[in-house]
Image (cartoon, rainbow, N blue to C red; front, side, top):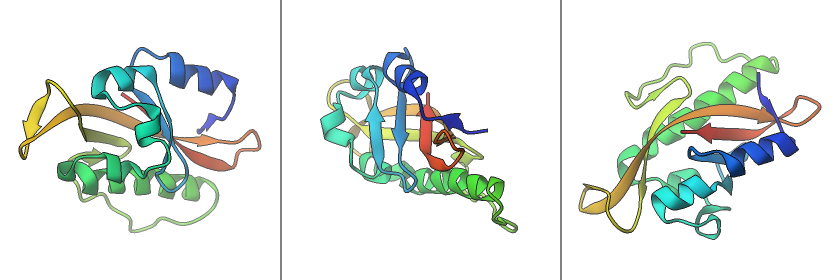
Length: 140
């Protein structure tokens, strides 16, 4: 079941004490909450409008793409399209869960010489009030 796009969802994204962001149906970041600002140092103006894979560190881009594709395919299946034969190949994307690494400034684990923050995120579909798939919400 998808989360309905509403004032309650907007409140959840912006007031949650855990990292939460949302994306459109192709993986472009549409919202970035205060907790993510604190964890990554990145402000909404730095990430909103960008593809999540462009915000993610190189070490997790493939699993991020796979996780987004998995959520989109599952929503398509719920809306009547077949996803037979689809499998998840990445060890860091299991169903709708992904280990996301984001390059940040300041103190964080170094990966490939860059400072990154590693976040465990669950991605769930969101829908409009009529039930149409409208994007993805990621909750850490």
